[in-house]
Length: 386
Ligand code: SAM
Image (cartoon, rainbow, N blue to C red; front, side):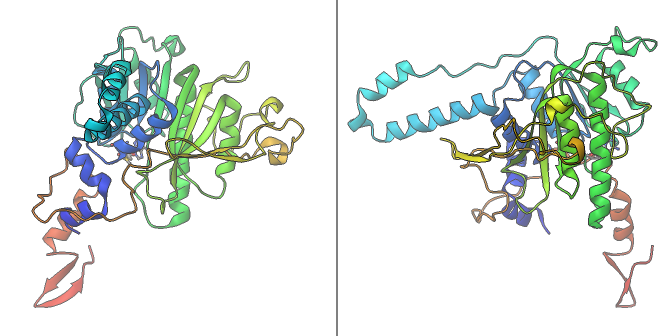
């Protein structure tokens, strides 16, 4: 498949190149922020599984450069559109426009934040980004934690007392394994990445902090939600418009980190499908009545309400729990499952930042040496055996 046909089939792939993002995933984070106002008050962030770095780019542009996207950006965009419409009917609306303009909020100037610290971690190397400390490490390995804490506070980090480091406001993880196509195996490896990200987050988040991570909505995802609900006040599942509806991918958005009293994150006994937090009955009483609201911006919000009398929401003593699901992203945004017609004379751009050392490079080299997916010998196609 050529660049051009991918441009047509994937609006976000094309848009990312046009707007300077390293990957189309940037739109997923931006659309989640649009819904959850993720970056409000945030200055210290850890971006797990960060390469090639589009999420870190978003962090750098919002926190370091002070650019506005998310909800505030969306409101500005709406305002601009409204003014444009008014401008088209200028004669009829004369006077009204002036009135509207004087009442309209001023376009916000970039407001860089102070004392920002962003640490990005991935197995793959990542090209540098302004204000982002990049680390090449495996998030499933315990040795990554001290490295991460040191990267967060290089001046004050004390290896003998690692917990003295200042905690972070937000941990995000877009971790994905190399997909094998074996559905169950892919879901399993993905869930291991997620548990690893959560265990890292539990070690560094400050009370009130947030955790956002990619999930595959597999069979036992409700076990995970139940665990998350023990340590976060709000747990919701977000599906940004830029994530294909046909994909089982979604993002769990956990807000207001409030570990039970006496809770201490332990890497010797990390949380996972085997080790779980004891259930706190106070968190087992959420959800039941589902109400559906279509908001002014067109997004659909499912509200599961609270019913104190219903205590069997969590099965087996509170081990399973269904998190509210939220479709996010402005409805006027591109549909990631649609194919768009492009002008004939359009030139397809190169990716902003091709992977520095992609794991598939060797496979591509081997294929090239063999003369394509199928090596050719004496005019006859033979299957590559290497
Ligand atoms: N959020 C990134 C962005 O916006 O550019 C894209 C992340 S990409 C979908 C998934 C990343 O997970 C890959 O770069 C991969 O190397 C990384 N990854 C997978 N397993 C990992 C592990 N055990 N430790 C660290 N990174 C891992």
